[in-house]
Image (cartoon, rainbow, N blue to C red; front, side, top):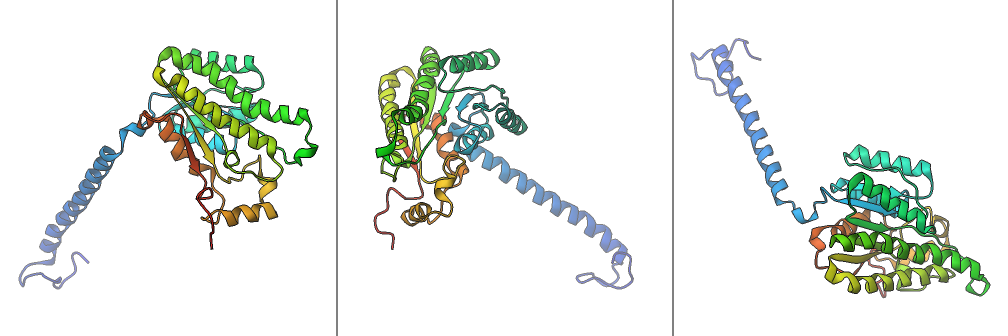
Length: 306
């Protein structure tokens, strides 16, 4: 439109279009610059308002059972919060994949496998992390297994297998990494338990017993180590479909009943546990120990839902 004969709206008589446009263009540039300045000011203030107690920059986290499901989501979440994260599991391919994803966030990682049933494996993991990073600030215990079968038919070997992974695996990791944290006088341990530690679910008694025991272990370690700078807490997820339990949930009467008992009327997404994990791993939770944070869509709070 600039340079056309005639007048623009607001143009005075005798004031040429070319002169009008020459003055109009700088005004438009100034307006855009002002908008950009306001946006930059708003962003700076938002960054200032972000609570620094949740910042994990400079921290090193180890996530045992961190290559799938909730453990994987927590590992990536801790990386997004600034921590260097070593997410481990038994399968080398999965370990390499999650390490690459963590590094893509801009944090450091290691590709190292671990088996929680093998104490020497956990000791090698600690040595490797100390060699590369010098310290471990955060430990997340997320490895687990489940089997559904009538308790009357469960063999002792089946129970031992589940208890050895879900309970003894947590104990081994807490002892090995906890000793390092106690020597440093600082550390955060987060154990993943379950809704099943509070209420019974049909035909998974060994799993329920193991998770209830993990909650008890969490509280015991918390009071033993509270005066030595190490906080030990747990997260109890509600119903979150994972590779571990998907066959029990999708398209089953059990899944429908669990949805009915959850006031939000849906299953959780693994990423919805991340906020609780970042809190417990951070300085924001420096006065929290022996706590179990429940993330369950209201399931444990519910009575009559309709």
